[in-house]
Image 1 (cartoon, rainbow, N blue to C red):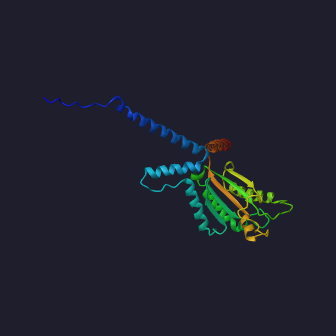
Image 2: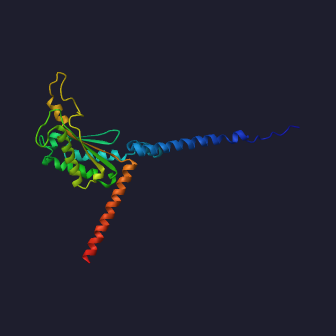
Image 3: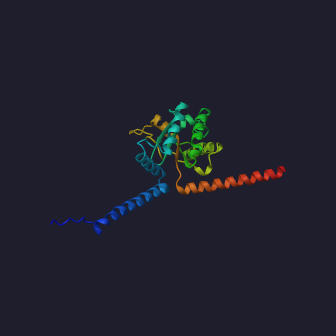
Length: 253
């Protein structure tokens, strides 16, 4: 008489194999979220790219655009609409957006005074950066000169000229309600040329010098600490406005 076969149940070892896979998955997820938090604190553009890549993979293959890329395209559109692409250069780098304003096109010679024709272009750029969806972006403005010394009563050296031009742009932004806490003005003089001022024989290259006379606007996302400071200042400003409004109402009564 044949002996009926028995079905073998899962051994204790086989039954617990899933725990190893589960533990690995949890560890990877934890490492992934730690990485995202690190990006958010120290490298917000990298965080944006990582988040966009995740959305791309989870979604239907549609390309997800980061906020920085969106702002870059908006500024490019403004520049082309204003037909200012010969005087304004825009690019993305690892930190954020770099906008180069030609010194000759935007400023009067040996001066920190803006050309009248440059004001509408700068005004449109300001409006774009100041859109509510980009409020968590910092703005650093760098003034650059060529290596030809300047010696005037107002500008004893290129340091004063470059700093004044950067400050002019920052003041322009502030007058159009960009919060000062978001901005920095930095004079670089001739320490960071975009192209060589001289050829190999030491002769000056006029077109290169013109290229180096520029103001660079860097626009990049705030880290978490900067966002916290920005929100605290915004809350304080709102509170002071409420107090002022209440005082005015009380005086009116």
